[in-house]
Image 1: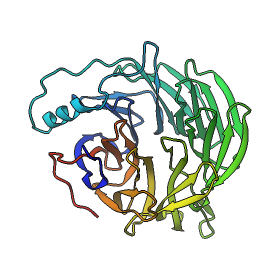
Image 2: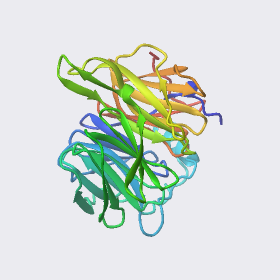
Image 3: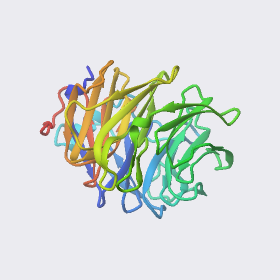
Length: 371
């Protein structure tokens, strides 16, 4: 079935007691993990509708990533064909004929405002963290895991990027070179390089073999120093490589007129990984706010979501620099996650709702008003 941004429509909502700050699909697409302002990480099961709370953080969580555990990677729903039937059942459609498939072990890692990095059994609800590391002095803003599932990268307000052994949490290397808060990290798919982005829009390309920064890339459109408030505002609030590792997208805010209130416009900067040249992607219509999540879709478009004066999701096809499609969201989006199959995306809402959207035609639930 054709996946297209124009098909985007609500499919399923999961409600939390507190506003949400982050969200990620697990590698099978069965579970959506979302962090809430009560310091928990919620696990929403798209097959059964069950909700489980992972408690152990003492402050808000922004970074969530996944590691295969011993005994094999997570299994469940390869293309999520069965998941669509389950979602129809949950929405009042035909009853699900088969029980949910078993879930193999996998681990979740998450980071919080207190600089802690925690490991969880993602397949087992309510088990508590299995490991904790004091990773950073101050806010640990993001976490990423390499494709092999062996190395974890974190970054934070102490201006450092750190590497950890996924198996036991042992420190591997500290990458020191940013002169301000580091907002995000992403492993290049080749496995030998790591990108990190800071408050001022400087993106560093690290050689993981030597620990040296090989070059700085320019995403400085995502930063401004506000002289009126004597404050910096910016940073890559989200960062993602495309499937070939040829492009790196950084999402945030630009054209800031008031740093205190966060008044500006959402922007995605796409960096060509080979030559480092930046390209700016802007929404189709005027919007005041920040882009908090971004992803490359295998079908060839870029999607992002954010919030400010409401919430929106934006789509850019091919070489577009101005978006071709916009979807209005019920609240400001603080993060965006793309499912492994690419059939759906989710946003973490400031209203405490994790909203799942389908990109396939013929979804049974009606589309809300577009903005």
